Image (cartoon, rainbow, N blue to C red; front, side, top):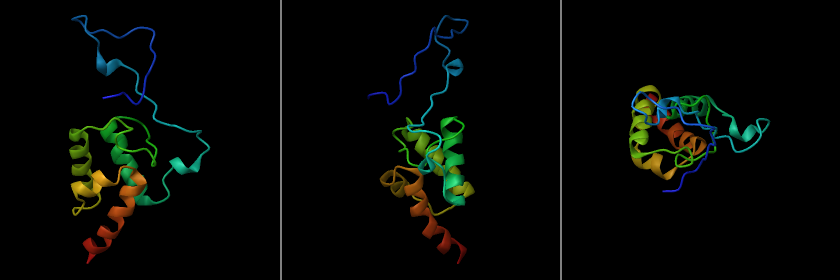
Length: 121
């Protein structure tokens, strides 16, 4: 596995045992372009909801809607956590396979949107 982000720190925060305290490490910034770029901001309410869920899963303030799950450092447990939140908050019919084949928030929104229509029927 190759890290997608490297963060340079002056020194590592240590816990009482002298080991690296991962919780006190700085959070990575996943933005790949300037903040004036509108392609990274959500266009729809559904994209905003998905962005909020992924921010919660990855413990970051905001994620790009174009960033893939793997670019964000997602693991299989993160995927299950995200799917559980999506099913609880947005759409009960969201499937694991659809989330795997559509890596970005924007792509996932396009897959989930038709399911919302049928869920209302």
